[in-house]
Amino acid sequence: RGAGFTMNFHEPILCLSSGCPIPSGHGAVYQTYRDYDHMDLNSYWSYMLASLAVVTTVWGSWRAKRLGLRERGKLLYQQVILWGAALVSVAVIYRLLGAGRINVDTTGLLVLLMLTFATFVDGMLVSWKLYVVSALLLLTLLMAAYVGQFLWIILLVAVVLIALVLVFVVWKIRHYGAD
Image (cartoon, rainbow, N blue to C red; front, side, top):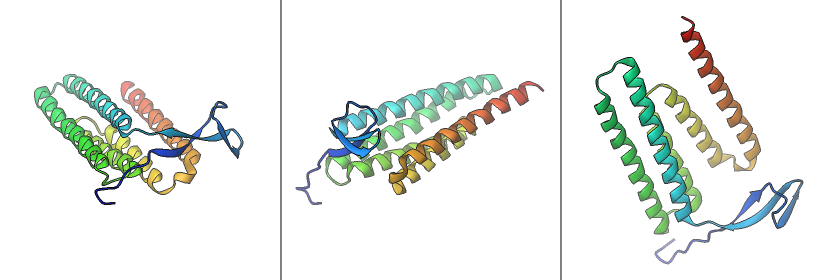
């Protein structure tokens, strides 16, 4: 992987629609090829990061107002620093991809790791519930890194875990709302 290394973005992907051109022989699952452009992936992760930053900042501001905390300006400052640094980290990761130092799979895992870490740190600033979100992101990262062949099982487990977290949060809100 020297300076002359070029990346091939023609990778097989799975398609669940009947319109996919190449059947893989596994029932309704078809295999096809798509050109991956790392700039599209960069845009996806940048939008994901920005939307998470906006949601957690608004949530933290609302929570600080509801709890009567006076340091809402400090929270906004901390959020701008945290999510700004995360956005810069994503940009650096994609510069490494563009330079040929890392591949597409590693890039996705690094960005997800950085997003997991930023969400965990934001849990200290906004709410403990972001610890749960970061744990789910970390679980997703570990499963994506080590057990890619069990994608449907991972998806099912993630949906069940998210449903359990939502049930717990609703129960907690109702339990404390009844007091």
